[in-house]
Length: 241
Ligand code: GEK
Image 1 (cartoon, rainbow, N blue to C red):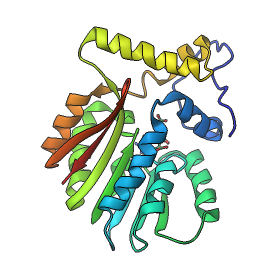
Image 2 (image 1 turned 90 degrees about the vertical axis):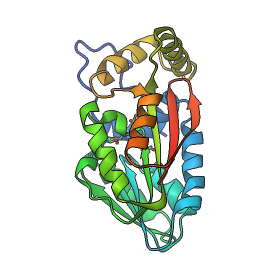
Image 3 (image 1 turned 135 degrees about the vertical axis):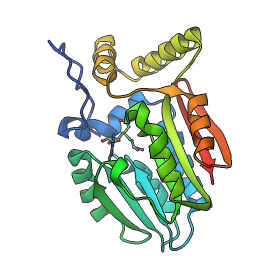
Image 4 (image 1 turned 90 degrees about the horizontal axis):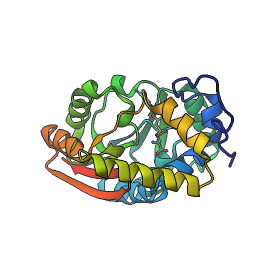
């Protein structure tokens, strides 16, 4: 695994974060050291895949990056479903196309799409994964996007949504941010790396409260909306149609 050193040297100007080749090359290390509980999220995505995926349906991994969730899903999916892994980053998609090709050819078919998730038609879906992706859409577009995805999910199907979250209580927000930064420090990031990454991602990743996510999912027609995981300022919700 290539180590993430992207923000280790002082930059005269920190530009907006991009999912480019440099990031794609270090992404597995970056996400493991930046998202507390990432491994648990992936493992439960695999478990939920087994519960919800039905034969002859579509499964979507929206904002798939290098396909970690896609592979967790494929391990547990019925063979005659079709998994659509979607990401708008050419760098991520190129790498995923290579690994999907060399992984075992057994199991469900995986189609990799280089596309904006807002332009993907979701239909006949039994399971949709949005693992740390909705947070990158402009907040004002999230309601209509989640409505549209929900309308493509079959009755009894599910969406698993994981997000970085904010807190309406300022003290709670500060505490969770501090604990998150401590987590990053404990995983080898320096104060400079943490500060420069924070500046870079500030305009790109807009977190919302867990309550806002839950209410949006209910409005979109999910009958059961269950937060199942939280570690500091990262949370995951299972929403069932
Ligand atoms: C994982 N799910 O490892 N359309 C398509 N892709 C997008 C869009 C968009 N509008 N906006 C952002 N992305 C993965 C991790 S990473 C999370 C997801 C993170 C893509 C972006 O290119 C990137 O690959 C991914 O969403 C977010 O389980 O880096 O914090």
